[in-house]
Image (cartoon, rainbow, N blue to C red; front, side, top):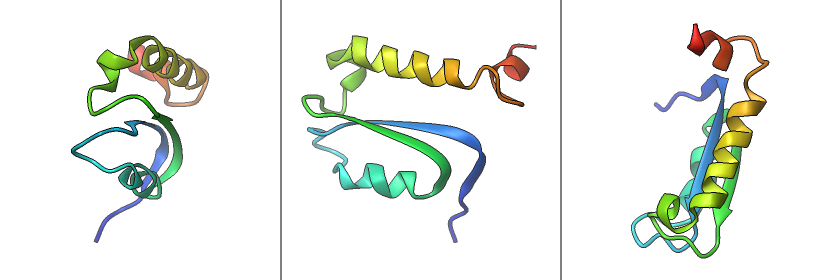
Length: 79
């Protein structure tokens, strides 16, 4: 039995040209999370953090900043 990830925001970033993991797995993974955001990168492979570095960094920064004000978010992690 697989548990649903709850109580925590989850970002899923996925390269659509990934030769190892098909794109459908991204949506399937998000379905196991109560609060998931999914962003795919059409030209990226499994190494999207290298191929689309600026876009990946922007997505991660926006995701992390969105959680700063939430109870138990980044503020708790910084203390």
